[in-house]
Image (cartoon, rainbow, N blue to C red; front, top):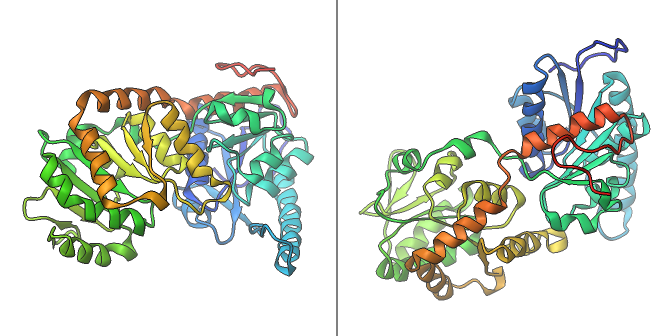
Length: 407
């Protein structure tokens, strides 16, 4: 996994270049693909390119991978002096990427979106390196839309994504890679981890790593009505900076909680749990019968792998309204109900969640629909495509070894 000098020997170890970042939604799929490639090619070298200030600059080295930072930032949607400065920075990022790619000499380059992916994949393409782009969302982000015309294969997570690409015939449905422990965690482990009752359904609510004030308020305010209607247990990840406010909200709603030594607030009966952050999300998902959440790509992939029904509340400020489009794709499959953030209110949420928990048959049907949308071997499929573009060389258009490239 070291950043090495380029070499031309026919039998030299494989080298894989990956780029993507800014958010976990771009980073975690890249990590999953990298690990699958290392499983297949244990002596290979892997190098990540990312931004200097994105999450990747901390997360990638922590995961044990070589990392090179380039100068890059997001483009504003309106022309301004800041936009011109960003374009200049992007040019510098491309120049830096060309130097890194030329020195590393990768056999394939994999971009998973985000600002840093653009310069790195452009440099790889210009230097004749076969490129694979992986898109997590229904609507491809601006970087991946731009790069899709230069990629040998575009790995998509939703069949609906194909129509947004410049060359839809190069798209292959691979799914969105998730952490292995999301797949392997058991319900029993999850219940034990949070001290929950196996005989009662569990509702899990969260608003992403930072939490969501609107989800927190609506969910907490809905708890008294829900607790009176259904014999369930409830968990909420509030976000670290919203934890104290959420505890106060619970007290005001008549749901008093006490903070234990582990920093988690629990009701007297232990059936309502408030946490600033869920460190063990695989176990939380494993014991959830219903999830209330935003609709980021990673969240939906994990829900589908586990086959968990969901009430999805898309983030209203994500560019291109991509979270609502993700959520509607799950809704069309029968796996979720969608509530827009502007329409979210406690009484309506209580009615919806209560009706779902009361109809176990409907909940099982949603679970089956969710599971049918999951692709557990997404990392394997993406790695298949990486190996295909290596065999085909730059600009290869052959058939991916397992799925088939449509023309």
